Length: 207
Picture 1 (cartoon, rainbow, N blue to C red):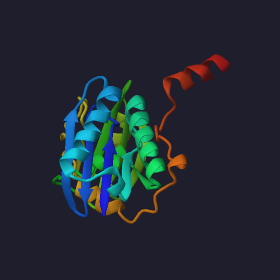
Picture 2 (cartoon, rainbow, N blue to C red; picture 1 turned 90 degrees about the horizontal axis):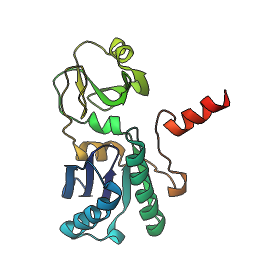
Picture 3 (tube, rainbow, N blue to C red; picture 1 turned 135 degrees about the vertical axis):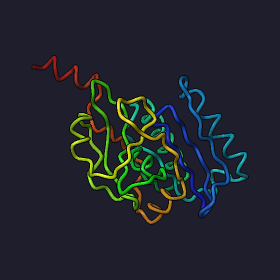
């Protein structure tokens, strides 16, 4: 089985081709700007380096949030377009669950994404990627109150809490979801976990 994996939910962009349980080509680097321009050449290079063509892909995995609203939209749109044109299913992946694949010492791992104003997108996962507390938009102090002892925090962001930087295990996440039914590309949507700023401002105007 050949898989295309796409994560543009943060500045740390991942695009990879996985064959069965082996990563044959992978881009995993930070991109601070112009993602919408750079992403297509990244995907093209990953395919070229793999020796696999888009028509060889069996399933597309895409991170559909939470994270950067713009980044999530870019990844989801690309996945939907590829899946529709190739008649493939799409398997959505949580950015927090992906971060939870980081190897750690402890019983639980707490992936976090800075959502500003002391809020984060966060969840609590065990070593088998089972969510003890589901992904949510939450005040960081409230999240800490939910975290069991012997837990490790992980985040790409600079947060006022000791944490690891994520070291993503793509094979682990693929194995976790390789049997997922997936969704029709037209049914794939971003999972922001909160309203966009434009939506929040619109609601304020209606009050």
